[in-house]
Amino acid sequence: MLDITQRPLLVYWELTRACELACRHCRAEAVPNRHPDELTTEEGFRLLDQLTAFGTPLPHIVITGGDPLKRPDLWELVRAARERGFTIAITPSGTYALTPDIVRRFKGEGIWMMALSIDGSTAERHDGIRQVPGSFEQTVRAAGWARDANLPIQVNTLVCEQTADDLPAVYDLITSLGAARWSLFFLIQVGRGKGLEEVSPEHSERLCKWLFEKANEGKVDIKTTEAPHYRRVALQHDLSKKPNRIAETVRRGFGIRDGAGIMFVSHVGDVYPSGFLPRKAGNVREQSPVEIYRHSPLFRSLRDVDQLKGKCRYCDYRRVCGGSRARAFAYTGDPLESDPLCPYISEEARSRGYGLVAV
Image (cartoon, rainbow, N blue to C red; front, side, top):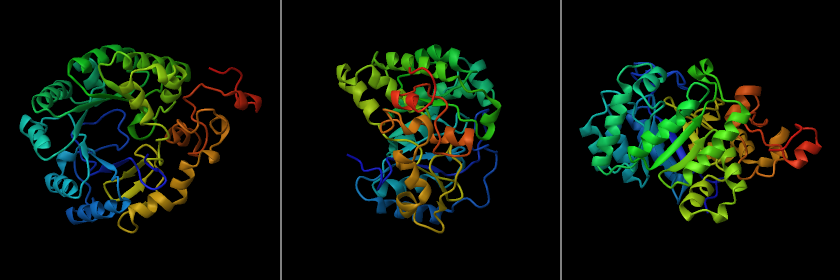
């Protein structure tokens, strides 16, 4: 079993914030041009060398942005990561820079999975979020190219009040595209996302139950981002009675949350617990990312469920869930406070005055 006190499961590496899209929920507030202080190619090689010090098993690296295709040295960095033994996933933007040749090259360079964002079941709905006409059609085409290249795809979908009613239609679309995984990002109001509206706790509960029902159909693996209470919902349905694939998909996320099994390295080398929790713990130009992850007070506190506050501290499921630390920070300025999106109140939390009714 992975010891997340010693190594993350996932390292998100934001190569650049440059991107041709202007998505309404973009945490990076991406812009068309690259930042002059981005990590250089040589600094990228050094970062990869530093990350190997986590030891076996090495974390998976998710190359993200902005749009990674904006970096002319992308292929050099991918090749260097593969040479060092890393498993690589990539999240290109749905623009005309993403071509059949690029998708085939992802496969040829040994990239394990490509993640595409689909935030609506139609061009009108998706492009309304991405704010660039044609993004929907290009993304759907890219999914087809990936299928032809035998490159697995993950589809990322935003969950907020503006998209929630469309999720059943998005599910039908992404299963028809042959996606291996569906990852639903429950909005955190950071960056441009401050202009969108989160679903209510009660609505999030209904959505998590619906998602678990869809997972049971077995058409696609389903996971949530910044909604770890999905795991609690799954456990309440008794995973021991579910097919092995579904149970394993849920269990794989147990205990994984911002700063616990997750680390984010920004385009300028700043290290955060995740891309959605903007509290800097260090910079790879000055410190080893391994030391930052293992020993910084911020990361250590986020991994310690006994330091959680409010109803999360007394929750029966705190070790498998732990709440969204990013949302707690967005609401209160304290990443250890309760996650306000989860409506569950344990008996112990109720006895201490947190809420009136348990889910």
